[in-house]
Length: 174
Image 1: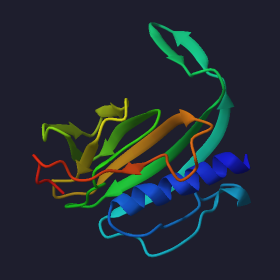
Image 2: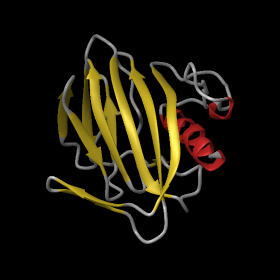
Image 3: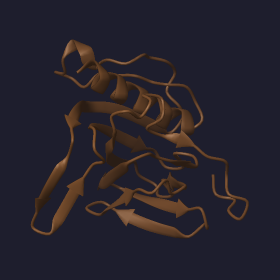
Image 4: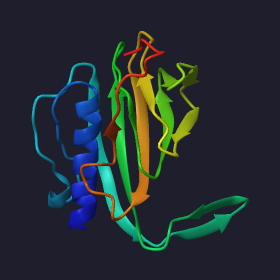
């Protein structure tokens, strides 16, 4: 459980670092004492709150045409609530493994490395995989609320669930 807790804390730290500031840690109300993370100044316009994390072991699941399988070994899962205020941005980044991102409220615009944009409104979602470089921004006028579910190999270093990337040369979005 300590590794999963560390994964959530560091995942949030990395996500917030991408937004242009240091780590901010909070614990979900009612969570066990192990789920706290280091605290620091939150970045402007982005708040990330760890919800839960766990080591799943080797994943082989299939149902109703959906198949999930990890490489031999083990996978970790971490869920993080992310609130992007109007103008807030994750910065350019990618992830090991897969991240599933439903939009709970508001809307976000995701830009890929070719600067193609896709808007996702509340009730829709997207996934991040294959190490694809992207950026997520709130270009609206209300807070956007996302729940990022990280599914990554257990051997992923705790500081690398979110990896910062340079801004693509052909895209001036920040």
